[in-house]
Structure formats: structure tokens, C-alpha cells
Length: 314
Image (cartoon, rainbow, N blue to C red):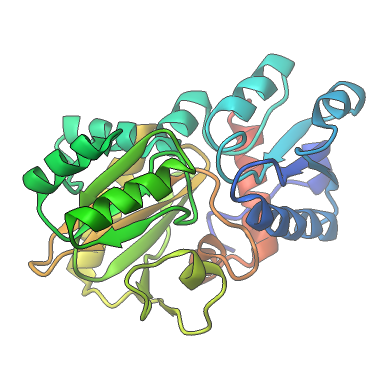
């Protein structure tokens, strides 16, 4: 049995509400994640039920008996600390990170500022709020660059740019998703995603795609995305990557579970991109892949995440 696996009787969790859907740009992915989590909990014998937070959540929060909540809401409204705060006010324990860590991780700019303050490597970047900011960023950072809405996930609104007109166009497009837009240096090299569970770092996954970067299509639609486990690094570099991930997640305050994205440049240096505190949870998502490599099937993974909410005394 894996040390990460829950040993509790499923009845110990009480009545569990799986929160999914919501109103963010990642709603469709959250619906799939929520369905997979709910099915796994029910199959394990947990008294679980689902709530689509886009519908009648507040009335149900007051009328349903909820002993704890399994949060599978991706993006704003569920992954940014707001749902965590609401549940704390209602006295309902929940899975994953708390209010502050959730809010920090959802804000890519604040995350990078925390890492920089601790000397952790993250690409040089700038905040964009105008065409003049684009010009200043281009001069300071050079090209190529990547533009990102600061509070979105699933690569929504992201674009690689190679010149100033492209940067201004990408900033305007990203502004349609988020008032705060981030631009950062383009790191050319392999990408890795590293999941954490119950304070342990799971086997890293190496990502490969013929797209210019690991975008929404590569994540959810394409059939040619490559997932490498083992990740392709030698033992020493993999240990370095896992240690960096642990430090990065600790700096943000990630609890229970999460997933960090990291690039490696041509000189072999690692660069932290972001942390997700409620990653995708379908059978084909990255955290379940890493869990399988660590000896946990999907049902065991879901129970381990839920178990942490009880152990935390939330």
C-alpha cells in the first residue's frame, strides 16, 4: 500500500459535497473533473453528492447537510480563495489550500513576486495595462515573449509574441479575459509539470507538443500531446526539480494537493511558471497520471485528497 493512500473508512468523511462547474472560463473542464471525482467517491462508498456552483449554490449551502466539501472548481470563483472563504464562514471543511494560498496561486503576478523575494527562479516579467506598457516591456525583456491573463488557467488567453505589434494585439486579447495581464520572457526548452499530494512531490511529467507551447488545445483537444513518465531527466536533475517544486509550493502555502509548471532552458536551468491549487481531475488529467506513477489509482487519489481535509482538522 502506498504511504499516500487513505486508510479511513469512507463513512468517516460524512456527507461530502463535490463542488464543480462554476462560472469561470474553465467551467467545462470543471464539469468533467467534478463528474469524475463524484463517481470515484460514490464507487468508494462515500456519501457524496454534486453541486454545480453556477446554479443554486447558496440556497443549497444553507439547506443541505454538508460535512465537508471537495472543491473541483477551476479558475476564479473556486480556485482563488473566494469559495474557501465562504466555506470557512459557513464552518464547512474543504479540500486543498486555504484562502491565502489559493488567492496567491491564482494571481500569477503575485506568485512570481513571492518567489522572487525568496530567490526562487522565475522568468523576468512585467504587468501590462496599456500600449505604452507593451513598448516598455518589449524594450526591457526583448523577444520572444509570452502574454498571459494574470488570473486565468488552462492557458486561456495566452499567446506567444515575436514583435511589438503582436505584443500589443495579444495584450488587448488577454485583456478580454482579465483586467490584469502579465508578459514574461519566453523560455525555450522542455516543460515539466509536477504534482504534490499530502506534502509529497509526485513523479514529474515531461510534456511535449508540436504547438508553440502547451496551450488549451494541446491540453484538452489534441491527440499528439506527449506525456513522459519518467520525465526524461537523470536522477540528480529530477531530484533538483522536485526540491524546487517543494520550495515553490511551500512559499505559496499550498496544502493537500496541487501542481506546479516548470520550464528548463537550453543551459539546463529550471524556471518556475505557476502553481495550480485545484488542477484538472479527469481520468486523463496530469495529477492522476502522476498519482498512478506513485502507485495510486484515481479512486485512491480522490480519497487521499479528501483524507487530508479531515486530517487538517478543517
